[in-house]
Length: 278
Image (tube, rainbow, N blue to C red; front, side, top):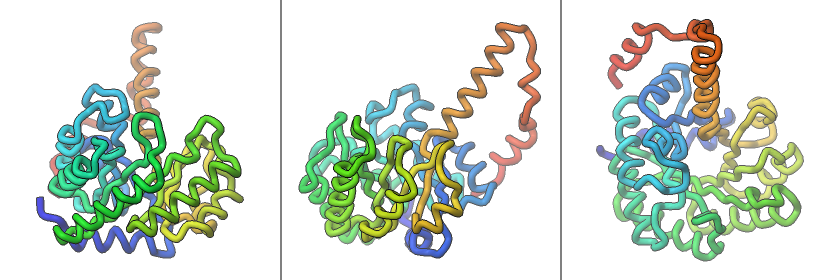
């Protein structure tokens, strides 16, 4: 697919608008179509979700080819911008990571999310900065102004959010910005409070992306704090699977199927949605 400069520009603008960007996370075509129908302005794929659909655990067990095959299906099915989760880049060398980025671009993505953790270990700040600079140089050569959202896992250490891990997140975020990143994603263990969110917004020079869960502050409150982008990763997919388990457990344990009628979509609704051209 050809790189869409119009979508890339629009996606970049969404990160600098007064209104917070609520990124819908999709793992297949039907989830992406639902998000677009609901009015989401952009979609981010969830690598954990795509991996689960394909029968893999999370953590680069699936190949970048398999990941991007789903990304391509999603970008072909919707009209809104799609940014691809390419985990840590599917390789230890810059050449491997550049090849992964190019596959995502070829699949129609106008942005990527890149992690600074591989095999459970944080990369050095210098190594990650080199990767970021290399990606931006390659994108310049290809005339593909990709939005590079860099995820730091500094707050996902066993000790969670504390003064030391916050300092590390800020140091990394600033270094990644200097290397050319367009946004910083700082996921946490559910312990990132209002004060620390405000501090990150103030000390990071790029749009801040955080992940939301059932305990997060409301979106308008996060917007007031200066958060630029929120996402929910694979959490919606996990919630759907949990609801599926309730339905299937009822059938086996009680022999009834009452839950099948709860909030169920019709055959026609699904077919109609999938028949709508992008």
